[in-house]
Image (cartoon, rainbow, N blue to C red; front, side):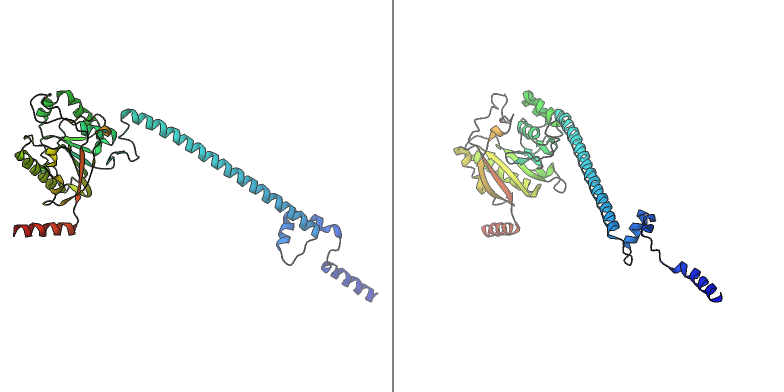
Length: 325
């Protein structure tokens, strides 16, 4: 009896240490626990359960990828809608602004011949302001500075038919100055503040006849203008002078008038007045409008001057000193 009792006690104690051998016991374990168990390296699940887990994971991955694609497509559609709305707003706003002035609000660079709305442009000796108005209308008005040799009263008396040019330039935010001497520009502009990319003098003339004296006075006019304009010209700026192509104007020898200046002649090219809409050339001298009617300017040429570099200035100064000796 004693031995049997001991065996029973030992059997009862060893029951808690025996592994479960029932085949259906694993079915009690939840799917989450199976996932956790599958991550454990030391535990091997039956192949059937592993297949179930892999299938579930693959299905969830596919669903997630589909959801991501849907979200991406939705985001793209939203972005497209936003862009379309912005385009509609921009178009409508541009249309509204263009009714005020189509040129002043255009952000793209505009060009008329050699001139851009990115250039700070000074026009000197623009008698009736028609050339300045043409540039201001086609480019950006606030980049244009128009000047007249006459006073404002003289301008209005001489050109009553073009007083509207002055009004339009002011409406386009252009600067208009009177009593400006092209041979003494530093008197009207501060070289430390006012600098220009383009300085234009169309058809300069002193008003004297067509003899030798007239040639000399006009040569002096051009030379003094080049000296003065250099003071308010930007480093890579250009000075443009337009002259008619006749024997009298050829006697001026404009290409050689840069010798005593810090500008140097670079090129000549045809002047195309048809590009400047509304431009009407006129004489500044003369009592009546008939006397101020300008001759034909077809075939005229534009002469372009640029700043000298340091070597060119040094060479020019040496030549002047040698001539003085």
